[in-house]
Image (cartoon, rainbow, N blue to C red; front, side):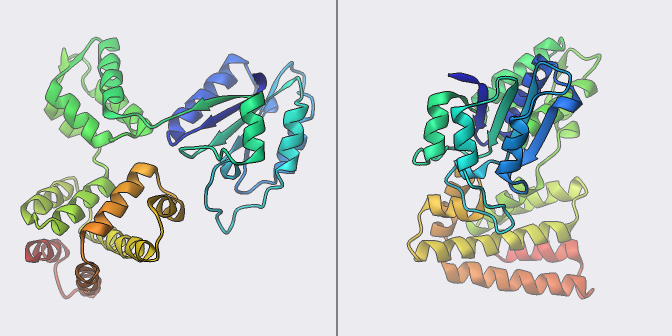
Length: 322
């Protein structure tokens, strides 16, 4: 394998950034010899030209190509620059000795049919960066607590994992806060997690929407009241719920046209797990019910903004009426 070219791909973008930073630190690369190009905005030819130039008063330089969507089977954004891959293909054949080229592909899979991907698989170092599952985060969280001289209660750990989901970035930032909060204690308990670890509003609103569609208004109210307790604005919650309903209608329309789950994932540019639940939700609820709820919610939004109804009570009444 060619150690002059390294590819990181996967949905754990925080982990990818961390690995790139480790490499930069390992080679002691200074700011003069580090360049990052966003492939959504920058021409590949410019980045490759940089990679072919010698370092500035140093033995090594690093050139990072981030958002290299063209190496995955991803839907192209309208604003994304068209990339002639011949520049990268030629560089793989003759990489610069003094340059370490790092390519970041924020997608679950590389496009195995792509000629350049095949060349990279033969000539570069490829690293997969999967999202962490609950068991991975469980072990990691326990180790972080132990390194700080603490233990973490099982119910506290369960709540922590439920709040950070599989986001490595959120897990790192929230664990840092939690360890600071627990200084001077012997263990981390559930109350500490409740007081410190941030709830992800989109995940919670997703729970509200699912509970409404499953005809579990008490569960939807429970999550809604939790968000209000954490000072979330009911109008913001309503806006996300409306967005979720509109998303379901779009997914239903795609499915009716014969599109697959992979097509839905590419269309919305979401992670595979998220696409799975989007498709399951869309298939599980009649379209006329979704449209009826959406119509009611849009009217509710108008009435709240025009001052006709109280925003907190109005959303509660909607949940109860379902």
